[in-house]
Length: 104
Image (cartoon, rainbow, N blue to C red; front, side):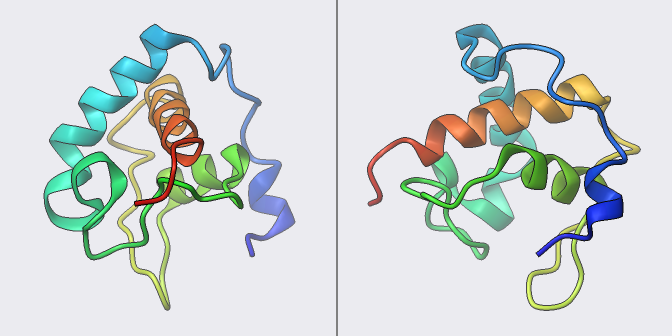
């Protein structure tokens, strides 16, 4: 679970997370940055947990983890200094899209 203070550290998504163009932008970014080593193609089959069929997906939590990273059980580098908030939200839009797909 993420700390409440961190969850309040960012604004809500600046666009509709169901926007097809934003989902596609997130998909391209995911494919070039996240898929090969950690999360696998289309968010399944990598070293990290998959996204397809994830019924517990929370956009705000995903934004915080992408931005700030994670230590402990699941290590993930922070991307908040690499990507703009809008680019991170595009990744979140894509991950939310994947979470709505059937689990493999």
